[in-house]
Amino acid sequence: MTEIRVTYPFNDVNERKIGVRLQLQFLGRWRRLLIILALIGPFVLIAPLLHWFTGLNMLRDEVIVSILLFEAGIICWMIMSNRFGRMVDQHIATAPHRQRDVTWGLTAAGAKGEGPLIPWAHIIDVQHIAGQTVLVLSLRLFIVLPDDALPDGMTPETLQSQIAKWRA
Picture 1 (cartoon, rainbow, N blue to C red):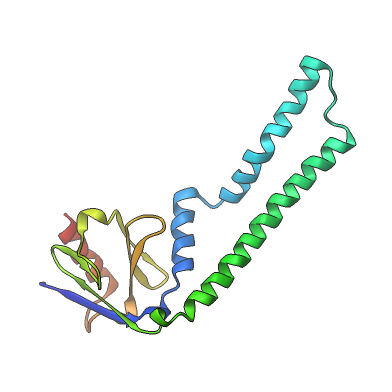
Picture 2: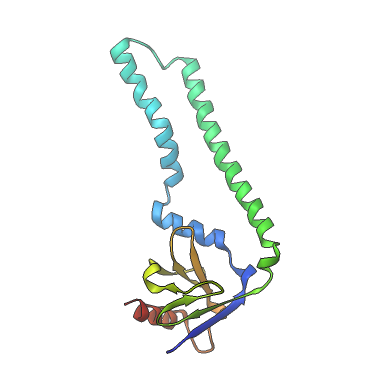
């Protein structure tokens, strides 16, 4: 096979969904809980140590309320961050550069879009996520090839096997 050309409407790609899936694979499903525990854990560990060494009682009402307010602030920040991200996604979806078709050419040398050729050595992983073959360059940078846009007679499995041959 010399070249595989994939053309699709740029606006049909849900980068946020793919990015979240890649992050979940990298960080795990409990990443938010772990972040909260990492921020709250020191308070919980310091209280008994301070009481043991200094006799200071950190389990008073003011300290507990402070810790709970801090936790609530972190949770509010996470919610607002998620909402802001969705607002940005909606704004980006209406941008003029998103209202056109994108074409990727895949050859033995690498993947070529409108910019320079991306050699296969720069692609760290190839995954199939939500009906799309994703060529992963990093957690935030990837090339999406929707299954609907593949050439006639090509399945995602044959595309992935051809890419695996080229990457070898």
